[in-house]
Structures are given as structure tokens and as C-alpha cells.
Amino acid sequence: MKENLRALEPIVPLAKEASSMSTPRNPSPARKESARTHMKRLAGYNITFDHGTPYLDALAQFVKALGVPCEEAPSPHAQAVIDTRRAAAMESESTGRRMMEGHLLFYGECHAGGISGLTLKDQVNLNKDYLPSPPRSTVPKLWGTLPRPQPDSCIGYTTTTEARTHNPSLVMPFSREEDDIAEWCFYSHTYPDHGPSQLETCHVSLIAETISSYLWLHWCEVDPVDGEVYCRIELIESAHLHKLSGMAETRKILHNYIDYAMGERLESIKAALPGETGMEETVAKLDDCVEFELTIRHTMTPSSSSREGENASPTKKLKRTLTDIM
Image 1 (cartoon, one colour):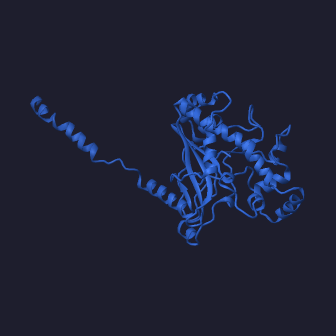
Image 2: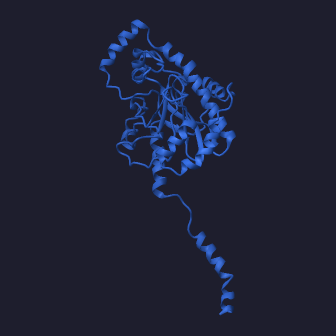
């Protein structure tokens, strides 16, 4: 018996190796097909994702400025991300996100130590009128309509409605009339003769789970070759959530972006709004608009949504995704 067992010894490892090699580790066909369909739908609407599209001058300078060291001391939240991520990974998606979002993002004025004029909301249905229009009539027939964007967490300017519900009232970046125009009819009334620049349409989004984070820049531009409008999504920074240097760099970029949003960007928005006389005429025209659904302004990330298009199959939501800052 022992001799027979010894005779089998060299065969057993080979059998195990052959068995392990006979089962290729390929991704699920359904998951792969869903991702491929999603990317084709975005491409159909001229939304490019991680194509390496170069920035033009103004946008290139803006991205460079985001990387300039802050005057403030490094945020303790970078270390808090490292300390919290393992515990957050053991919780449900919603609980884990709440544990992490205060360290990855920024709280508004209604939270202790929050930033005046800002608000942080969960699962906001963003205004679908800001979604790209189909460049050709065949696109909706082939790929369906784009879904209404719904980021897990969203930071924007505090609206007058929200500010007045608090006691004492929160800081309001806009007057009531400015708020109505900026939230609903901003681009059509403030840029009647020309489209807004890349810098004036750009925003930043953060996608994160318990291992890594990705910081993206979104903007719109007219392609000089075919003359069509394209929505670009390009990576600014990525980091591992267990490395302090990477998280400190991400927090630095987000701090600089918040400073820009509350300074130069806010001033440019208010300067572009009509004067007092034009304001009254513009507000009167708002009666013809659809009711407001949006309580927080600024655009979207197509990959984060409440549901897929009318003719598309629903896909599973990414776990612990934090998106759309400003």
C-alpha cells in the first residue's frame, strides 16, 4: 500500500495544477456586457471617459492651480480616512458611506465646523435638462435616453430655501432672484450670444471605495474637427486609501477647488447674472418653466445614476461611491 501511495505522489501535484489551470478567471459575461453597453451609450452621446483628452490653456492652468500647496496645515481628515476605511468596509453601503464622506468630502454650514455657503446632500436627483442632447436622432433609438444623474453625495451652493429653514439662517451665496435664475435658466440667460467656456462648465467628481479613490474633471467643449459638443471626463488624481501621502494630495486638490468655487467661480456666476432691471424680466419668464426639482446646483457624473435609460437594462450600483463635488 505504501509503495502504491509513493508511486502516486508525483502525479497529485500535476493533477492539482492542471485542475487550477483548466478554469480561466474571466469576468462575468453579464457584467462585462453591461459595462460595454454603458460605455457605448456614453460615446453615442459624445461623452468621452478617460480618453486622455488634453486640456486647453485656461483649463490646463486651472488644473495646475489645483495642485498648488495650500496655505493651511495638512488636513487631519486624510489620516482619518486611513483609520476609518477598514471599519467602513464591514458596514452596509449607506453606513460605510456616511462614515467616510465627512473625511473625503466637506460638510456644509449646517454641520459643526462646516463651510459657509455650502451644503452636502445625499442621493440628489440632479436636473436632467443639463444632460447632453443626442447629437443625432438615431442615438436615442439605439441606446435609449441618458439616466437622471443621482450621485451618492453631492456638494453645492446653499439655496435660499434651505438657508431660511435653519434658525439662525445659513449664509446665502445668492439672493432669491439670483438663486432662481442660476438654478434653472442660468446658461440660457447669462450666455445668450455665446456658450460658456470650458472653465465655466467644469466640475469635479470623486469616486471612492474602501481601497482607492479617483478624482475626475468634467467639462464640455466644441470639437474643432467635427463641430460637435463633447462632454469630457478625465482623471486628475488617484490615491490608495491606506497611504497618507496620496490622501493628503487628494484633500489638497479638493481644498483648492472649494476655494475656487467659493471665490472666483461664485463671483463670475453673480457677475454673469442680469442686472436689477433685467433680473425682474428674467424672473417673470420663469413662470413658464417647469417646477423646480433641484435643490442643489451644478452638473453630473453619468456613471452615477438612480436608474438606467428607458430602453436599457438596470445595472448594479458601485459600492461606496462618493461622487460629484460641486
